[in-house]
Length: 477
Ligand SMILES: [Zn+2]
Image (cartoon, rainbow, N blue to C red; front, side):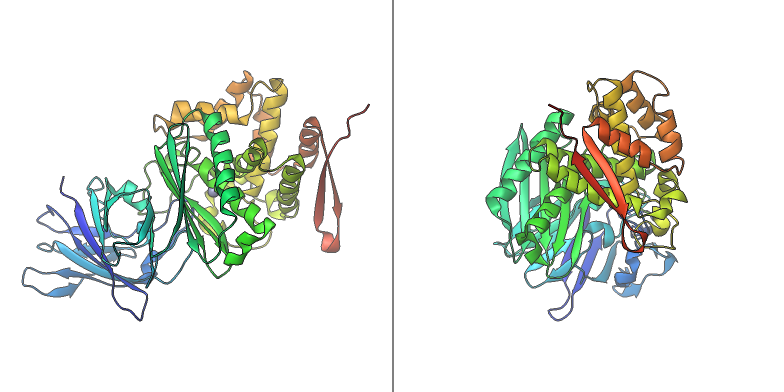
């Protein structure tokens, strides 16, 4: 199959403008449409990336460039006879999901800047990055030779960021037969030996738990910019993690935040990229795709990502208690959890999941989802005398659903958890009260901690804010 060939180049030395020149093969005689994704996987809200587009033009058989007209907010009509299209975008934002260019960095997330033909999603892509110098380093999961990058189809392209720079810190490690690459762009660098050792630890623990890893080669792409930023975005065979200002990574607190995000993002390689809600399989980039399963996608990942820091020895029980206290504080201080269940809030992230929104309206899928995951984990452990756990269910889902690319539904998820217990309905009351309902978790949460040998208490401070305390219960002599 002939690929769509796209040359990408900086348009100017003065302004952060990126120019795309695309040649489409075998176009239909009646013309076609071009779509810019309206959202990006990992952030379940509309992205409005078209606001960064200056112009979209087509090259006519007469040899003129003409402006293409829109048929929708993020869609352009390409008239019959045009096979070559160019567009320019403003690329001045440096975060885990953006696109950015300057003299020594080309960082591209195709999902927010590459137009594709929605009627022909199976076409391969060949990208040529004109600004890449021969001695630059490149971190990406895409196959590439020099400045030429290949994606098998639109799903792979949109899920594969490219980080190319004059100078990138790089190290590689292997776990079982899988290769992992760590790439860093930034002025500051954490202690590199500790950084890689910790990666090896949480990677080994997760791969051991799931048995196998979804991809042969994986890339961690780190950005430590000068401005305040803190988030990560998961991809099929890579992740981008941004933490700034870059001095943060030199502090113990900033470093632990970084490792916690890294463990979370790696867990997504199974949970979301493979154990994927059916609404997102495959990704439909043309419209909002709400799912009630955000509490699995982000809640289970938040809880398990941090639990693997404990299981791999990166933090001890006290360290894990501090992480859980921060999570529980956010939970207790969110009155929105009494208004909209975490399942309904999952559906609604497309409205206000990533901004404060109106007061006291929604649950937070990360926080309330992680608390729910913990409660489920303890119920499974208690009912099976610790022979099974939430991870047992996730490993089963990876084998049964993820490896076969079957979409996840709510019923499949809850059935997998109850199957570990061997009792249909064993989690029905938890699901009713804390997933589909807006019940107060406090007493159940406290009892769950107690069954793990931990005492959970809380007190109300200034302006009624809750502060939790989690401590080991002393073992009686
Ligand atoms: Zn996540």
